[in-house]
Image (cartoon, rainbow, N blue to C red; front, side, top):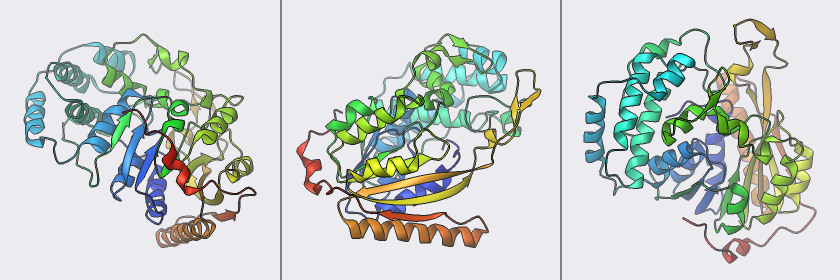
Length: 386
């Protein structure tokens, strides 16, 4: 599994606890990323549609959202053993991410080069290919030299980077097989026919695409032009989302929310982002009854260690060490929204007290000024393109 980043360690169990209390059989994760949320929902018995513009997310979705008992895991296990036996060789990946940048040690970079090139020589169904790519991606993740995100690499080699790359078949996720797409979220939103939509868009200037640019190159295998000390793909700079613009993000989110027809909505936001919690509350209040759970969490470790220039000299300080995450629940049933938000906050506080961590900030229950959309509205639109 790809390493947990920031608040995801808390949010995924919290989202599961919320959804299991709702009348939800189908859901879409519009900004799926590493598919953690989709996996959690699938394990509840929910049919999940996983969507993201990133190619690495599509591969992870094939492995964890689409793959089911029909997958020939014995065959894939045999292919992985053959791939493990390959001798490494120098290629684009080793040069770009082991020498020009220091994400991996060269002995692992050479093996990644050999294994990734070999995967393309097999005759594979999409779900099989996704599983093999996920196996390699996760193997690389276990021996990288970063703090989790790929905006930068560590000045010195991480201890795990000395280990040997090891391929493992992705573990099956219980629950019904889902579907995956690679579409713009705002284009997909009005086409959805699901009970619940989870919305976790980029919330500041940092692009999710850039945060995992190494995985994007590993899956695409397109040897892109790059720039900067981090050797990011050139399209990280050229392909900017409206959600990464302080000026454009509110309008983009408003358009997306206004086009959804699902009766239930979960939206994640942060006080580190562009969207003000009170303004979000007002926007969501037009869609249904609103409950809010707030979670206090430690900032991503890369944001805690200071700001350094390319030569390693510290040039800036950290403004704060903790953030607040907001999880908004919107639905047609006021009592259910209130009870779920309250129960979630209580569970968070109990867990925090048991572990000695700071408790959740609390649940804020608010009733929409306008009448919530009828629950049947979600059934009126077409299902997403597969």
